[in-house]
Length: 223
Ligand code: SF4
Ligand code: SF4
Image (cartoon, rainbow, N blue to C red; front, side):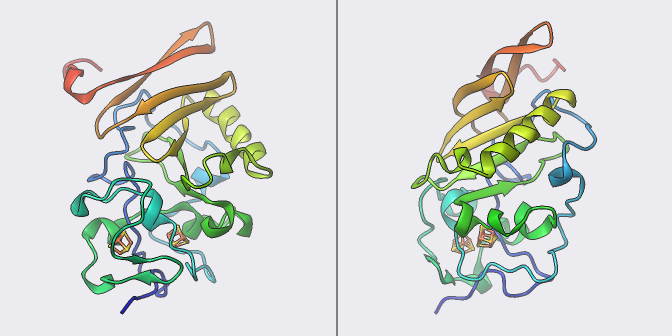
């Protein structure tokens, strides 16, 4: 018997977006982005614990596909074995803590309109993680270019402009593959695991390269 994912407005239930909770493996922890203020309405207006009145998952279950759940050993980009797509979670009462603590942007950010609902946009947006201010745009692997469509692309480019001025980042994720999106262009990062660090290289004020430093190679004494 399945249970609908988000039928209780005061109780976010969602699977952890890899990397946007302490137990996840987004790989964005430890980036150079720290303590910024507003990047856009998306980030400044979000209160993760508050669902916007009137919003609910309905028949959407996309986060159960695009997000990785470490407690289940579920990789990002494939359906959770407990998910009844378009219906809900078969183990709702026993779902992992990660699924209960997921911080999710569309449900909690009034400035994101109905077009951003994931079953329509094919995009799951996740919130800044641990203060690093990164927006992660997670596309349904069945629609890897969802973010390039209007009106999403135009809005994402506005976020990139804001991110640039605030030393923050905008990252697209399809399955396990990440790409840094900037006003200078796109920088494929490959797989980014928990605690990996994204390092950016600038020439003047322009970004010219980006690379991932694996967590095992990060010197904890370096800033
Ligand atoms: S992606 Fe968002 S709207 Fe869809 S099921 Fe998950 S939390 Fe609900
Ligand atoms: S256990 Fe699976 S189906 Fe249930 S909420 Fe978590 S990811 Fe979704």
